[in-house]
Image (cartoon, one colour):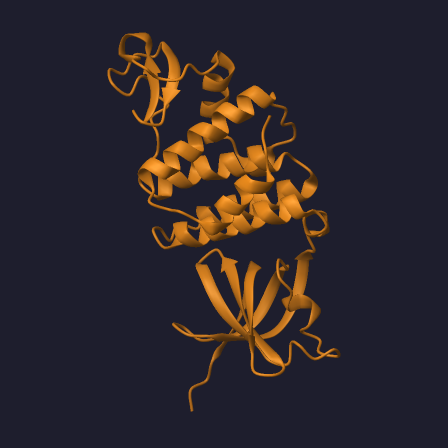
Length: 246
C-alpha cells in the first residue's frame, strides 16, 4: 500500500469541474505551478470543504499529495477571501485573464517568482488598485519568463539612450534616427513603462496614470504579446470586450 504525503500548499483555485454526484476537481495555482485537487463531497450542503473549495478561494490547502496525479483536499484555511474582486464583474474578468496567462507561463518556466507576481497582482486588484495597470505590470514581467522581453535599456537598433518612442514591431524603445512609421508615444509613457517593468508589485502604494498613458502602455503590450508570445487566450478576448480605456 502506497502511503501518500500530507502537504500544506498555498494557492488560488482558478477553475473547477464536477466529478460524480457530490464531488469536484479544482485546479490551484501554486508556487510550483498548477496542481489538481479532488474535493470529495464538496457539493454537499453540509460539507466542510464546500466553502473553501469555491472558485477564486485563496487559501492554505492541506492535501494528500500525489505526484503526477490528482491530490486530494483534506482541509483549507482561507488566507484572503478576495471579496472585492468577487463582487465586481470587471475584476473577476481580470482575475480570469491573469489566471489563464499564469497557467500558460508556468508551462514555459517553473520559476517561483511567477507565483509571487501573480499573488501580488491579485491582492493589489482586490485592494482597489487599477486592474488595467496591475495587469499590464504582470504582463510585462511575464515576458521575461516567456523569453521575449522587450528592450527598454535603449534603442533596440543602436542602443542610443535618447529614445523617442516604443515599438512592438521593433521590440522596444526606438531613437529618433531609427524611427520610421512608428507610433509616437508620449515621454510619460516611455518613462512609466520602463518603471513598471521593474517595480515590485507587492510594494505599490500609489498608482495614478492618465488615460492616455494607460492606453499607450496597454496597446503596446497587447501588440507585443500578439507578435511574440503565440498566446491567444479566450479570457483576454472577453476582457477586451468589457473593459474600455478612454
